Image 1: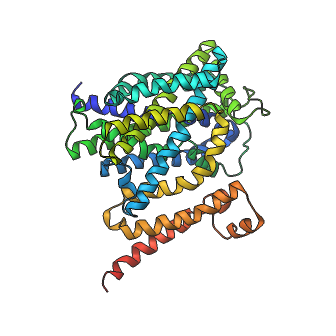
Image 2: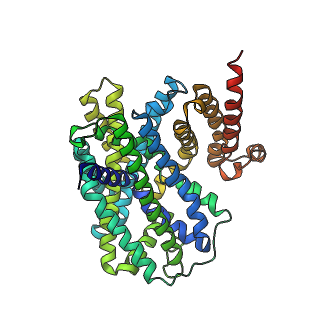
Image 3: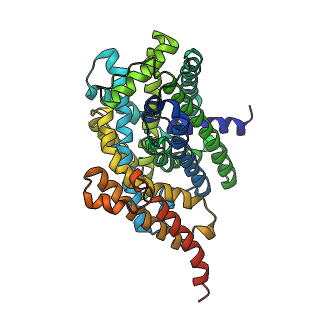
Length: 434
C-alpha cells in the first residue's frame, strides 16, 4: 500500500472515530424506534446536522488549516476568542463526560455493578495517558480502534436488518424531519467538527505523517472528511432503521428514563441479532466509541490553550489534566441528565457554530467580515428566544415567536440569517462604489 493511500485510510478512520461517540451510538436507534414508518424522514433530518454540517466543518478546516480561532476571526478577534473558550469549555463539560456516563451505564455497571465515580476515574485516567502521548493519537485510533468499531457496528446493523421482520410501527413524531434535525444537535458533531478538526490538523503536522505541503494536507483532509462522512451516514441510517424495524419486538419500557430506554433498545437489538455474545460486543463497542471521542475532545482543548499561551507544553498538560478531572466529576451524572443540561446550551451555541462553518466554506467575496458580522449577530439574536423558551416559556414569548417562521421548532434563526446573508451580499458591493 503506498504512503498516500495508507495516510488517507488512517486519517479517515481516525476522523470517523473522533466523531463517533456516546450520543452517536445511543441516539439513532431510539429515534428510529419512535419514528416507526417515518424513519427515513427522520434520517434525512438527522443527517443534516449530524453528517452534512460536520463534514462541511472538516472541509472548512481543510481550507483554513489553522485553529478554531480562525473560524470566527472575521467577526472580530474578541468574538472569536470568547467563542473558542466557550466551545472548548462546553466540549469538556458536556460531551466528554457524557462518554464516560454512557460507558458506565451500558458497559460497566451491568457487568460489574461498580460506582460511576470509579468508572469515570479509571476512564479519564486512560484518556489522559493517550492525550499526553498526542503525537500517536491519530495513528493508534486510525489503525487499530476504528476498524474494530466499524466491523462491530456493521455486524449489529447487518445481522439485525437481515434477521428482523422489517415491520415498522406507526410514527410518534408530527414533524419527523425537524425532530431528526434537532436530535442531530445532541450528537455534538458540528461542535466536534470544529474541535477534532483541529486535532487532525495538528496530528498531520507531526513528521511521522509525512504530510507537509498545504495542498497535500487540504486534499488529504477533504478526502478523509468525505470518507468519514459516508461512514457516518451508513452507520446512522443503519442504526435508525434497525431501531424502527425492531420497534415491535423489543420492549424499551416507556416508564424508564430516556437514557435507560436507549440502553435497553440498543442492548435488545444486539442480543436479538448476535445472541448473548451481542451484549458483550455492545459493551466493547460502547467503550471504544466513547473513549476515542473523549480523547479527541480533550486533546483538541489542550491543543487550543497551548497555542493560546505561547505554545507552552506545560499549558497543554495542565489543560488536559483539568479537562479529565472535570470529566470525572461530571461523568458521575447519568446520561439523560447530561443531555437535559446540554439542550439549552446547544440551542444557543449550535446555530452560531453552523453559521461559522457554512460561511468559512464560501468563496471570499461571499464571506467578507461584514457578512460574517451581520449574519452571526442576527443568528445570535434569534437564538435567544429558543433558549428562553426551553428554560422558562411565557405567554408573551410564545406570542412573539409565533411571528417568527420555524420558531416553534427551535429554528427561528434560520430564515433571518438567510435573509440577512442575501441582503448583505447584495448591498455590500454597491456600498463600495461610494
